[in-house]
Amino acid sequence: MSTVAEKILASHSGLDEAQPGEIVKAEIDFAFMPALTAALAFYAMYDMTIEKVWDRDKVTILLDHIAPATNITNASLHKECREIAREQSLRYFYDINSGVCHQVIPENGHVYPGMLMVGADSHTCTHGAFGAFATGIGSTDMGAAIGTGKLWFKVPETIRVNAEGRLAPRVMSKDVILKTAKELGADGATYCSLEFTGSTIRDMSVGARMTLCNMAIELGAKTGIVEPDDKTSRFLEGRVKHGYTPVYSDADAVYREKLEIDGAALDPQVACPHAVDNVKPVTEVAGKAVNQVFIGSCTNGRLEDLLVAAEIMGGKRVHPDVRVIATPASYEVYEAANSRGIIKTLMDAGAVVCNPSCSVCFGGNHGILAPGEVGLSTSNRNFRGRQGSTESYVYLCSPATAAASALTGAITDPREV
Image (cartoon, rainbow, N blue to C red; front, side, top):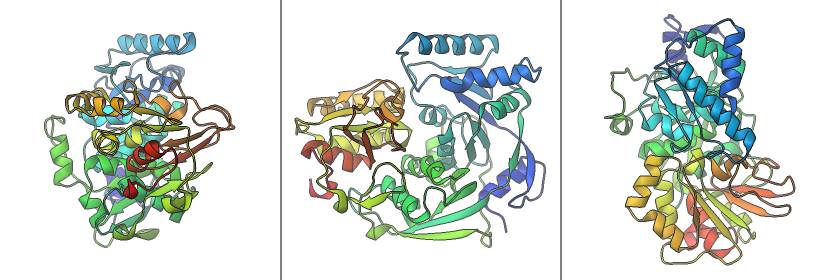
């Protein structure tokens, strides 16, 4: 009668089963930190009088949020992270040419079904797309995790999101998770596991499932999870060098709530300022003029996302009143997009293509919005001031909607382009 989340936490705590609300002490399989919080985690570890990480093969640091460094403060932070990685003899360290942590981690075989992963970034839940329990934690907790290899968890309740039916052309997984946000609300899944099931999910690529799990945190969830299948194993083949045991929910598993999504009837969705759950069908916001379009981030910076944008924008030009910034989520994605001509197609259309990084998503270095400007973004948050001025406005959408809108200069239904 257990869900995937309950089973993983139980197995990692030496228990036969774990019930929602129960506190368990679980063994960690992998821990990672972006540069912004890495040093704080190590300071916390040192304060616990622990000098070395519990396993140098299972701890890593990634420089992704502001990469390359844009000022002396960032450069100093990057320098400190490099020094820590050397002092700790970390086997894996990902510098500024690598990409966004949540894309780099699976590409390099650090995530697999049935594992327990923690990251010092709220969107660590992305990795639940591989059938893992993955969650973001704070710097103090991370200090304990990297120093001892263990951490306390409260076993979450699970909400089942069941989506059925084939998505229409140019309706994407981003539209599914935005619709979920509208239905559950920004706090509707607080400290729960969001388990995504149904034929719509089974039809999705691994990358599309990552988009779903990535935004679980935007509904307050502890993690998002998709049960592994053949697509999962094919992605991980050649990346994960060891065996693993997939975990599945029992047929009679108990859920706190069940949400049904009609995938076949779903329209493209747009999250309007300044809340992720302020979601409307694209038809209700079509015509809203935009100043900037961003295609990228750990939510939608994968090869398939850039490909959709290139298919829509190919042979056309970006509207003269719009600037477009495209950012591949990793070096692997960038290289693949370049070899397939996607980068050139986007550039020929008038887009600026940036190096793999978090880029525009959190307003770190690329594409800051000025007061009064409107940004349309494929990222995961549209909080006030998220991508620049507190007087700017950010709308969230899929890569298809973003690309179509870049051509017209206003939010546009991608099915009409």
